[in-house]
Length: 373
Image (tube, rainbow, N blue to C red; front, side):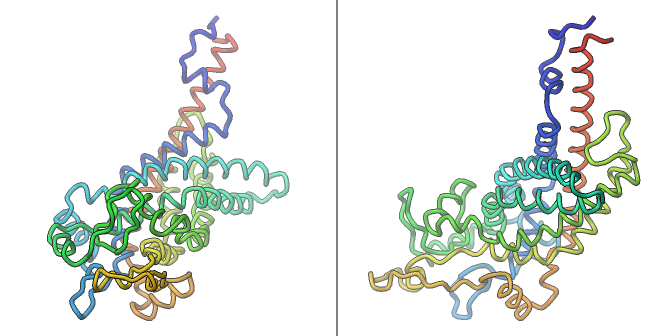
């Protein structure tokens, strides 16, 4: 007879753990793994989405950056030339900090919602659809500040030549920890915490929720992806999402992941461009428009003038359509597919693997606890 003392720490925990805990752990590990693997492609996609908002004025003042990113390979070359390997992993910190709670919350709320909604509906497709919406909304609201920081870090660029020129073009902000940054310097944020501090002191708490509305509209993405994934996985393997402790049908899981992500990304991509534009622009800082020219401002002039280019979803949509045409709404789509499909695949394969492993460990732990052979 096996004794409880023979249990490993993992078996002891798993034997009494709930499905909610399993989903949280498996989701966090899946999101973390996916974020690390696909970070360089995320950087490239973000730069392609955001570059349309930058312009060089005719009078020679550098206020942003010219359009310099073209395609996956071209963008990768520019980033590698100007920033090296650090540039390819710019924003990795927020990715790690964001994906852990995002997928932990998402998978937990999704499975909880399915159980709750099953009491009122019999149609599995309706249950999956609304559970995806609820889970997506919960995870988006919780983690939006992290994704704003990630997007800003990834969208800015660094070049020694441009930074040297900018050093003479812009007056320096103060050095104190609470100094309010005054200008849209092309190399503004040095790290995740530096970005968070500067955003809070110069733009306020609301800046961390830039792009929240289009992000919530983007729930249509998960409303397409995960019900489709669960349906396809059931058709291919006979098991629902996160189910099974025996032999895995990895080809079926892989196929369901790829097909569901391609369908969801193609249908809902434009909202990502709008969200990126809203997230990457800074909110107005008092007196900023006067500092641009002379570096001097009077107390009477220290007022906030909202001269942001993008204000709200509708205005952003109209501005992009008018200035860049409908193709801008699909800027970086190819790169996004090359990033999103592997990211979704890694996430789901890792999630399914961890869930299957935890279920096996739980069964073994319960067997040892009960004293059966």
